[in-house]
Image (cartoon, rainbow, N blue to C red; front, side, top):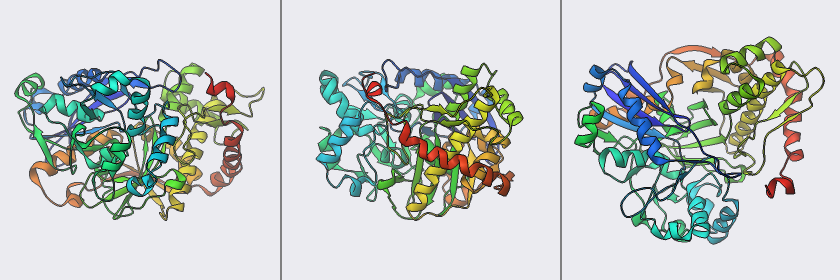
Length: 486
C-alpha cells in the first residue's frame, strides 16, 4: 500500500493505492482561503497540518496499517516563512495572490538573465516576488526568516522533521536554475536570500526522510519512508501516465492547467508559458496556467442560487452550447497565460433581457474553455503540438463541459478511470517508486480510458465567433484607475 497526500487550496486529499495500482482508500478535509485585502490570498500553514491529519485518519485503519511509503503533492508557489523555531512567522502567501507586481518588475531589472536561468517571467503568483514584497513591506518578518518552504514541504517538515523539496515544485519559486536542476545563487541574492534558507532538493521519486514516530502513532501508519513528491500539476501528470515526451493533460481544479511533458527544457516566457522540472529525473514540462477554472463554477453556482456544481452543469446543458450572446471572462483572480496580468478581473459581457441563470452558467463554461484555448495557443507558439489530452481534477466529472472544452480547443479529451483523484494519485505513485524502484513509465502507466470526447465540427463552428469576441474583450476590461486604487 502506498499513501499519496495532496495539500490543495480548497482541501487536502489522501489516497492509498494497493500494489496493483487500485485505490484502496481515500480521505478528504476542507480548507479555506483568507483574502484580507484586494489581491491578497493567504492560508494558515497549521490548517494544512490539521487537514492532512484529518484526511489520513478518514481512511480505514486496516488500510493505513498496511502503508509502506508516503508521497506528497501540493499547491505550488506558496510562501511559507519560518523563524528560528521552525514556526510560521505569518500566514502563507498563496499561488493566486497578486500583490507583488511591482516586485516582479524589480526582480526582472535586478536579474537581466532571469528568463534564461528560470525559463519564466517573474509573475506575482511565484514565490520569489512574494519574499521581495515581505522584505519591502514587512521588514521585521523578513529579517526573522530562517527557512522558506512550499506548502507540501511544510507538511513534510511536520511529518519527518526534514526541510526538503522536489524539483518540480521548487521550479515554481523561480529561484531555480531549471535547466541545471539546482538553486540559482543569482536569483536568491536578488531577493536578499541564500541557499541556506532553502530546503534540500530531490527528484520526486527520492526518499527525503522517515515518518516521525509520534506522527506514525497519530495517523495509525507505520514509520515509513516519505518521498519528495511533486507540485500538484507534476504529480497529477505522474498519476495519469504523462511521463513521456509530448504526453499532455488538462487539469480542471481550482485553477486550470494544460501540462505537457518534455524531454528537454523548452521555455517560452514571452507568452507567459511556464517551463519547470518534472517530478521524474531527466524530464521537464511546459504549462499554460489559468488562475480560475473550476473555481468559476463554484462562484457562479453561488451567485445564481444553484445547489452546487452538478445543478449548475444541468442548467447550462438545458440552455445548450452557444445559446446566447453572453460572454464570461474568467479572471476572478487575475490571469497568467498568456496575459501575465494579476490585476485584471472577471466580467460578464453582452447580457440582455433574456439572460437567465442557465445562460450565465453556459457562458461560464465557455469562458473557461476559451481561456484554456488561449493557453493552448501559447504552447503551440513554444513549439508544442497537442492533439490529445488526458483530463483530471474535479471538473473532469462533467462530460457536458468536456464537449465544450474539446470543441473550443479543437483537441481530443481522454477521461481516465480514477482521473478525478488528481495529484494524490501521482504522489502515491512516487511513493511506490521511492521504495520499489522500477521503470517510471511502467509504474506510472496511464489508467484505463473511461471515455473520450472529440471536437464536434458543428460545435467548433458555433463557438468560433464567441471565442474571437472573447479574445477581443480582454483589452476592454484591463484594470482601470479605480481597480488599481481599490
